[in-house]
Length: 461
Image (cartoon, rainbow, N blue to C red; front, side):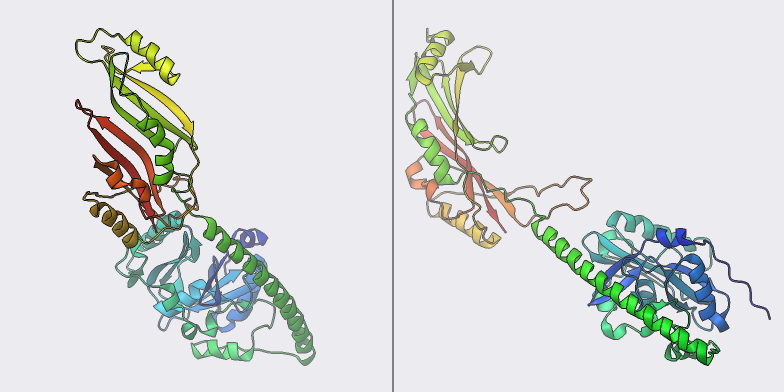
């Protein structure tokens, strides 16, 4: 029987240059994804066929897969020698297929926004499914690969994917799948240099049903052996350089990940002692009346939108039946505060004067654990007969188009506490370094009794 002539879909360096080659490291071993997988047609001379096709396609290395059961199909996965696709590294798809079985669609989380996928049907890698992708790409690619069996009698015996996607009932850790003991030499990439396949490699494939005849002439063997040695030296040098480059990239990625965090929100904000020091002199010296108008409250706060600036606000009201006018009060406010009073209602019976002042933010104090931070704040208030219910702040929301959103390593809790005795509370003495105060308010009732309200937050790991 005459074997069918091998048909190659694309030729020349164009295909080799366009392959999405990605190298990942798992358990200390290098795995290459993005190979061009092609079913060979000459099982008895698959090596020569792979070499011929590989050279025609501009490829340098190859991995092999055998069809399931008694199938005599052999599939070759080709790659150019770039981006770390060297002889001796492992084929990502061949290793996953050989480890998990012949009819499996498998996806794994490999790193930050990095996911690997492999589809295997009848022992053969599904074309285009040997990939390492971003999260968004993975979702689309996984679904597309899963649908490739629609309308056929083929079935996925296993579907594996990270639970976060909700597309599979089984999830596996890739480090537990591709252990050093699970890796076989047949998963490794081999050079396409002529006669670079040794007898042990040929015998290994003969055991699975192949008959390969190797004819080597003495002189030709010597020359070919010399070429193979020289090629290996070049491969080793290139591989060593790639390892150095990869080590540099790994350090750069590690440094980026280390620093790619949400800034500490408490840095630059005022501690309770700092805000009290800035606000209390002005609040305590405020006239309780002026031009016949009565003081109803004083508020002092900072705003994250204007760092380094504090605001104090004095509120007054016109007593019922008073003959003092809003204009009278404005004149008094200008003389007293050197600032303009603004009406707060349509009848001009309430007014407020606002002043701004400079403040210095606090340091980047070390955050405690959630348990320590929460217990410290609550216990401090309980010791003074006060009740406080800290509320969690919403988490940081990254930009939707940010490919590497920073991670948040802290959380914040807001609180509000009110008392009629500011000395008893002594808010500036809270023993938690990451406590920040954003507002102090003093409200006066008709009998001039003062209620002090403090608003702030504390931050934990």
